[in-house]
Length: 280
Length: 332
Image (tube, rainbow over all chains, first blue to last red; front, side):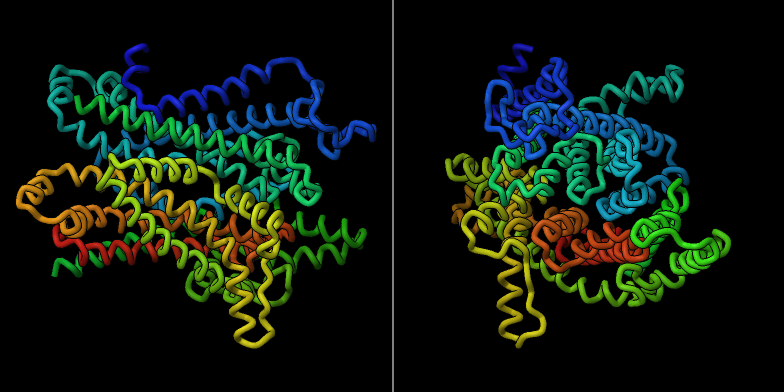
C-alpha cells in the first residue's frame, strides 16, 4: 500500500481521494439518521431557507433539505452506477472469454452482436425503453436497462486479451498438464483480466451515472428516486435558475462535475500506473 | 480484387449491424409489459373524460393500426422492415397527426447534422492540433496545463456543460437568448443570423467536450510516437523540430485518430441530443423530447432507426477511407 502511494502519480492520488470522498458521503454519511428529504413540506416557513446549522445547504422552494437530498442523490447515483458496472463487467468478461476461447462460429456470432452494441447510439434506445416504462420505472429496472449497453465494450477487450493469452506458454502448460478449460480460465486467465476489468469497472460506473442523469433530464428516470440527475431536473422544473436559488441548482451540478472529474482522474491515473508497472 | 472482397465483407457487416439494431428496437416494445396503445387511451381519457365502450374499441383498433401492431408478430416485423428500412415510412406522427414521421424528421434532421458534424470536425482538428503540440513537447509547462484543463472538462456529461454555459452566458451575462429561436419565415439574411445566434452556445458546449477528448488521446499517442527510434534517428540526422513534428510524429499518430473519429460518432449523437434539449435547439433531440412527453412512439421509433442507420453508415465510410490514408493497411 505504501509502495503504491509512493509510485502513484498526482493524478491518481487526486482521483482516488475525490472518489473515496464521494463513496464516504454516499455510503457512510448517508447512514447518519436524518428525516427523509423527498416529501414536500407544507409549512411555508420551511421554504427557501438560507443555509444554517439545521439545513447545511438551505431548503428548496418545497421545503426539502438540500444537503440531505444531495447525500441521498450521491448514494443512489453511485448505487445505480455500481450495479450497472458490476452487471456489465461480469457479462462482458463471460462473453469475451467464451468468444476468445471457444472460437469458431460461436465467436463470430457473438462478435457481430457485440459490435452492433458498440456501434449503435445508446441514448435513443435507452430513451425508447424508459419511455415505454414511464411512470412505472424502478431502480433495478433502470440498472438492467443501462447494463444492456455496458457489456459490449469490455467483452470486445477481454476477447482480444483472451486471444493473445491463449498462445502464451503458461496457458499451454496448463492445458498439457490436464487442466480443464474452466479451471484454466479461472486460475490462469481471470487474474490477468482482473486488473483490466477494474479500470473498465470504473469507466462503466461513470458512463452509467452519466446516462442515468441524461435520462433524468428527459424526465425518464424513476420519479420517486433522488439521483443527481433528478435533483438537477427538479431544480430546473421549479425554476431555481430564474429565481436565482443558486445553492439548490448548483449543489447537484457541482457534485456531479466533481464526481466525474474525480472518477476520470482515477481511471486514467490507474491506467498509467498499470502501464508503468508493466514497463518495469 | 482484394479491395472488392474487403468492401463486400464490410458492407455485409454494415447491413447485419443495422438489421440486429433494428430487430432489437422492434422487439423491445413488444416484450415490455407496458402497452403503448393502452397508455395512449389512458392519456386521452384523462385529458377529455371517459369515452363510451364502442368508441373506445374503435379508437383502440385504429391506434393498433397506426402503431403497426396489427397482425401476427412476423407480419408486423416484415412490414416494419419493409416500410421503415426501405422507405423510411414509420407511419403518421401522433403528436401532429396525420403528418408522416418521415416528413417531420426531415425538417429537423438538417439542423442536428449541421450542428454535430461541424462541431465534431472542428473539435477533431483543434483537439488533435493541441494534443500533438502537447505530446510532442510534453515536458513544457503549457502542455501540462492544457492537458489538465482537458481532463477536467472531458468527463463532464454533455447536458451539464450545456447547463453551465446557459446559466453563465444566456442568463447571467445575457449575451445569448435562453432558448434558441430560429426565424424561418423571414428573408435569408435574418434566417442565417438567427441560426448562427441560436447555434453558438450549443456548438461551443459540444466543442469543449470533443476537443477535450482529442487533446487527451492525441497527447498520449504523439507522446508515445515521439519516443520511437525513428524519431530519435530523425533528430540525429539534424532535421528541424517542425519537420519531425509534421512528417514523423503527426503522420503516424493521426491514423489512429481517424478510426477513433468513426467510433466517437455514436457518443457525439447522444451528446447533441442532450445539448439540443437544454438549449431548445430545433433538432432531432428536441423532437425526441417532444415525442416522449406526447408518447409519440412512431416518432421515437423512427428517430432511433434513422440514428442507427446514420451512425453505422458513418462508421462504414470511415472504415472504407482508412486504407487510403494508411499505406500499411492492405485490405486484409
